[in-house]
Length: 230
Image 1 (cartoon, one colour):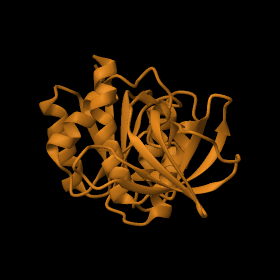
Image 2 (cartoon, one colour):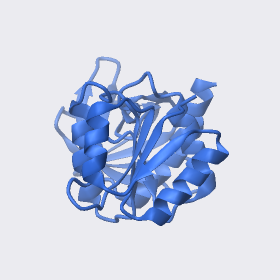
Image 3 (cartoon, helix red, strand yellow):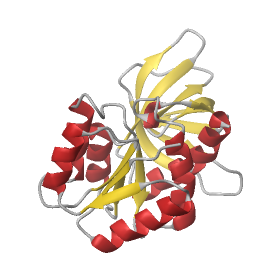
């Protein structure tokens, strides 16, 4: 289990809350409210997981994520970005910088504990957000006037592999409607076709997913990832 976890947030109250949850999971952690000090420690020490707030005096959580992914010691360390942002662009920048998961404010203890369990199993994997898990969900794909219905073969926070009766050209911008659970409203996000195969499969990259869409997808994926870890 991870035992050296770094928490970086300029709000001491948030640091204390996260440390309390980590302690309840029997994980050792320490917190820093100075992001410059955190940058120095990250460059000098190896951590098992790092929690970073998005909004801090420079360097902020996104810049620290970039530094972590460029470092030798923590290049593969799971990064959990803490955010209360609604801005799609901020969420996208966090993932592009190397975030493994998002922890949304206000912080929910039960969701955080589940996230910690996933983080435990991701130490040996770079950017767990790119790990695909097998999942069969109905999906509708719209591209202009063309409509396709298919089924997912696997999912990640960043994309999905879909089998449909036919495929669309690589580069096509699409809208997808993903049925994560029966009885709930479909998840609607923009995506782009990144690859196609001869067996009518398409790899789709999710683009500009907002806070609520990302949160729903993450909540759906966590139990599946946990099942693989177990």
